[in-house]
Length: 459
Image (cartoon, rainbow, N blue to C red; front, side, top):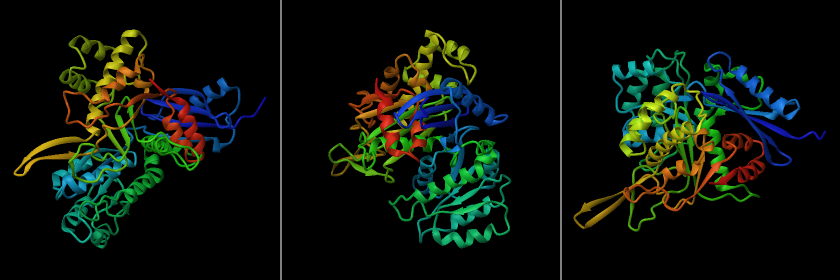
């Protein structure tokens, strides 16, 4: 029997542990397996079950450790709070840094922290705190005040400092002798209108690898897999960037969007400049990152059913007759659709999630009266010219009509101010492999890209 060069690519999810097997010689997906996650007990139990299922199906052992790569969004993913100065500037910059690193921002605080704010941060007990505020050479009083407040926290979350560089010595002095992990990164907003998040993103990823996976019990899998376990959203973002931009030897698809609907969140990614397409439009706000991710923690199709039902009622995506059926049939987070009605209901929920998440991710146009005439102001990215939207996540990939779910992200005439894609072709991640290709791209970017081109198929 021919000994194939296989890779086993794992995603530890909150609900399911997923495994994708690829053949590097044929550049194809050999199989996909999933089992209920066992993060509440021992995460390696579910991993072992998935690996054994793959071995039984393939008729061969996994082989060397280098064949296994993993990412994780288990135990709630990477939960972060940001503490900044002005919400529209430094706080927003911090949120963008966190989302680009695969984190889920569970709360943001601005201006000077109060004692009540500190109590709320302790209650939230985040995985990481991102402390920012002040341009270089600007205000440093607020970030010093907030650092002093944070030094008294009960929670042990590592603190990344990415604000006014002139406050660094003072912050170090405040934490001298503290057991808290303090990590410094470059200022996310070194001057007004300049956004620099790469250093903060790197710090977030390093802390996830070195500290967070241990706190969540994911470190038990380190002895089984090769390389560092990274956040699942980081893996998907890597795949989207690779698919859009290509490599030195393999052409990409160009600017695109990815919508990932899950049980706990709905993530949207855009790999695009997002510059104005409307003549005369002026951009307001911070510059948008070319590779952008937003995550909506209230739009998971299992963990947020009540909020989705209410949003579906307001948008008209859902009828009253569906409400009781949805609540009764999807009361368990691990429940998968089994019959025609359940697939229909699951797709309706996913459609609401795609609609709301897409609207939050895309930019907007506003026409503002002015003495010299009307001003056209754009906030966020103009994604109206995007030609490719890819759907992933179980509720889209396994839907009976994935196109009906994905079409919810497109432009609609009754909301002309929303800069949604107008003429985009719709695709699905047919083997649910984007996260896996993001992992594989760490070793084999060209092969990962060619495999994606095979599995990303038009609806």
